[in-house]
Image (tube, rainbow, N blue to C red; front, side):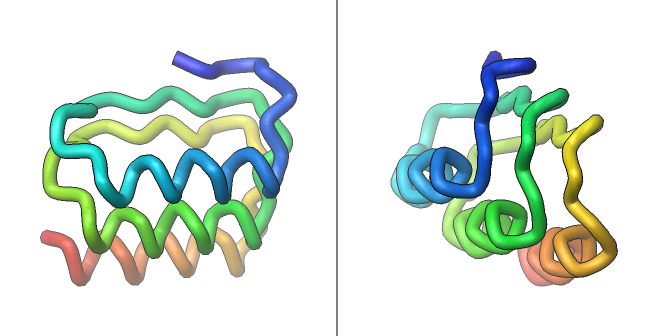
Length: 79
């Protein structure tokens, strides 16, 4: 769990890269960080390749409507 870890967009992109190839991670807590739309977009892209993650907590970030839209599209294509 990486809550309140000062994670911004650059770190979210690195996490997304690891998430793409992970087949064992089922939960990822990223609440209370500084992830914005670009970081959310990277995570959304990774979700399209990850089949094991069942819980992603991005509460209390600065996602904006754009970031939320990226995530929503990824969830629709991954369900």
